[in-house]
Image 1 (cartoon, rainbow, N blue to C red):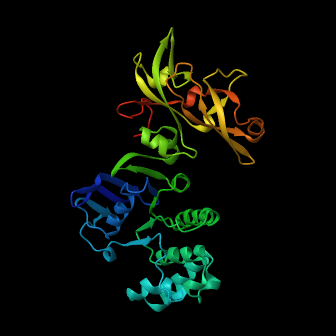
Image 2 (cartoon, rainbow, N blue to C red):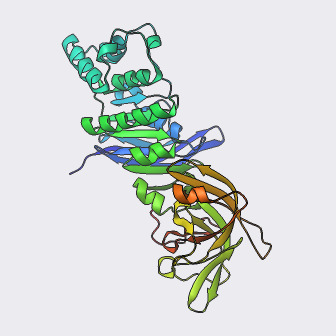
Image 3 (cartoon, helix red, strand yellow):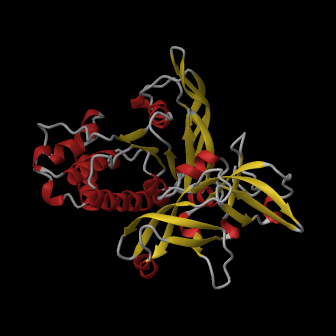
Amino acid sequence: MTETRLQAQRIVKAFGNNPILRGVDVSLQKGEFGVLVGPSGCGKSTLLRIVAGLEEVSSGTIEIAGRDVTELPPKDRDIAMVFQSYALYPHLTVRENLAFGLTLRKTPPAEIAKRVTEASEMLGLEKLLERLPKQLSGGQRQRVAMGRAIVRRPKLFLFDEPLSNLDAALRAEVRVTIRNLHDRLDATTLYVTHDQVEAMTLGDKLWVLNGGKVEQTGAPLDVYARPRTLFVAAFLGSPKMNLVNVAVVHQGNSVLAEGQGVRTPIPSPRFGTLAKGMEATLGIRPHDVHIAGEGRELSCTLLVEFVEALGFEAYVHGKTLSDTGEGDAKLVVRLDAEHGRRVKVGEKVPLSFDPAHIHLFDKKTEIALDDKATE
């Protein structure tokens, strides 16, 4: 039977009259990598600090490995935390930084040496053990911070935006290191980030937070493919999902979404019965929009305003052309490099939406009309 390593239930946190978390539940099984993702101010770091014991909870309970730790201080929770700032002691060597927590706990010297050696080998720090933090690069400092957590061998690893201070290349490198270490150690990890690439690539399980509430939870690719709310749909994905204001139109046996220069079929079996004239927001990701023709029906015409040529692909930015005067919609379309080179600014390009990948959201509630959206 799989062990529940973290169980945070009905977590509420308020600073005075300002609510930060509004009844959040988070559960992780042993060996899982969970990610809290959302925009700045959504409460994800506050939740992590509550799990760590660095913030008091207003109400709710926290269990780690079956033990209620809600009222316990951080040192008694059997967790290890890696911060955005490296939090290394500047006057201590790498070796001493790695060993510091174990020394405080009066771990036998032989055991300390063994664990420091193991961690430094995992992280490629063997040749840096006698250096001071100021002699290290940003990526090396972050590895030391991770090593200090690893030597603890905790029940739960907590990461609070650990890659924010690194450049793009280092972020990709350290991201792979973190996931590899998690798998090698059979660790249980809760990770906070605002970066959706980190969230999608690292996590086994995702919680998307917004305004102190969980908008959606599930496997990253499931949440991406079937967003339950308009917020989740717009937040996950780069470039963002295209959003168009539409109304439901019944034409014979067909059901269409029409508005802002867009007219495209709705796959009715997936969305069920939609009332005629119903107002909705249509979502379509850039890679699910194609140039019309060759069996693809016209969904809209795009006036090209800008082309991002990235070598292996191109992102075409523009606005839809409407004959009814209800206003255009901004669209981004992903094309392969060959088609991207042919498109010019000012050109009018016929586009087709892939009906199988259309998303629809109720205009008032912003909840997905797709009955297969994950909870």
